[in-house]
Length: 393
View 1 (cartoon, rainbow, N blue to C red):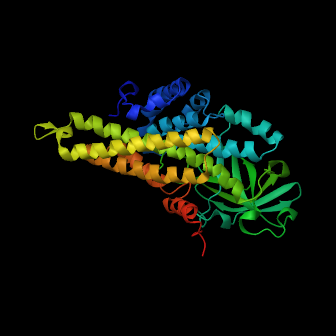
View 2 (view 1 turned 180 degrees about the vertical axis):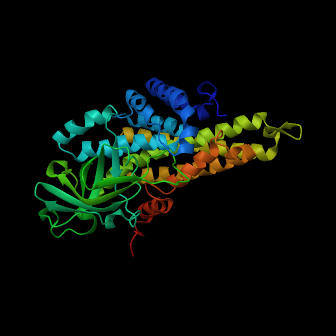
View 3 (view 1 turned 90 degrees about the vertical axis):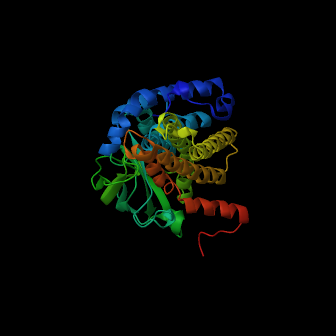
């Protein structure tokens, strides 16, 4: 029910704020999503699977390479207009996995992994979260102990996006019994390792029975005497701050992506309200429906303009991590409100998989929680505003 690209309204003359190159890139991604991704999404949601057949096309669009910040954001917007699971695969693969190798790896590691990852031949995953440690990753318990020629990993990770599809996973673990961490405690002892698929003792397992992010390959990972060679340790990592720097890149993509989900939901509601008749006229003619549409429209406009503003700051290397927390907090809230409200405009058909708003709302419940919960981002902003840290007593 959502409008086609040619019918899409240009909120607040948004396109006028983009360069011709940015618009052309956005349109290429949009055409791919419309032709290759959207027709598959309902079935993938029903099956709880990711459409791996679209990966070569994503690579051909250049989404697995380095993109200017606004191009990156526009791609996230278009991908999540289809489904958050599509954006999440690209985000984790390109920003968390490739970005970590590029930032903290050796030249040999970059040459060994990045070309294949850029072509989509090797998918990357990022594994930080554990069953007992989500918002407090500094307390993680997976350990890495030195053994002859490398390190032995032991423990249990959870919510590793792409885990079951990945050829290489960035694993964050607490380094113990090693000279590099003598005297280091907490987050300072955390290091990162490249674990390749098929390594003995490395067992990724799909997380099933999800009610959200069903298109995403969410995984648990078990490590039982998993030995990785010294050549697979990322030497540039010096503590949890390295992981948080990577996560900030992914959060930036969420700011744009959820605006895409909100846009798809609003457009669906607007289109349906014009053709659905009750009491002898379209429901768009009723005041309560128009009130909902106006509120949704305002939220979508605000979200898109905030995302673009952060993108321009990022281009000038002036984007602070607190700015990203603000964008993630505000835009996820806006998008969740829009998706829920859009579903009410759709009435009964809004619960069918031929509609998109309820699927987006379900995904947004995950986005309210992951890459820093709503509460965590409030505390990040609170610390910045007050100068007082409320995370620890």
